[in-house]
Image (cartoon, rainbow, N blue to C red; front, side):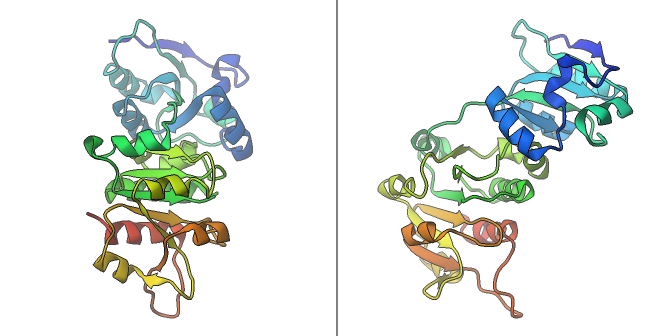
Length: 280
């Protein structure tokens, strides 16, 4: 098993912990993390799920009380001849580094896995028989919503998630945390063109359903009564919902039946309803 390489940290400006600086700066991290090929896993639960998914840590940063648990966790990694740097700092130093009070155990800087092509991702689903239910997230910018949708996707059997070029990063710290690490369970990749990428899905036999409010929308109940063999559920950005181009490119528009004078749900709640209703 790999032996952790433990280093005390007393200086928040120590260059060795540069991966963890200013974790609350969303704009900075959104540029910094993908370009450096990393993402941040927060909490021992998330780190465990990342390790179980085969992801490798670059380093770990934590307070002294969490060190015994971390050493036990890293013991499960295959020995690849290199040690994992473990940086240990007191809580006030951790807060000065990251910009927030770290109270969920360890933070880990993880190697970001390469994204598969859409074709390879969908072909590999269901043990190689191919995906049957896919979710597309169009330009959803709230990382909390992205994480919540991934948690619903994992729990309700969605085979794969595709995100548009401008959608928030599913591996951003907040998305990963809200998903409780289930973002590592659901195969996902980023579409290179939008909405042009829908043509490839339709060619692969998928029926594309846009969840949107429209005069010609069919009820989710009607879709469930006669489900297509392969289904894509498109979910749009907060507030405005799906773009006009996405709706026009869909095969049909679907709305969730509502009561009490409410016309729609939050996108994360809507995803859970749609995923559950169309489960197979």
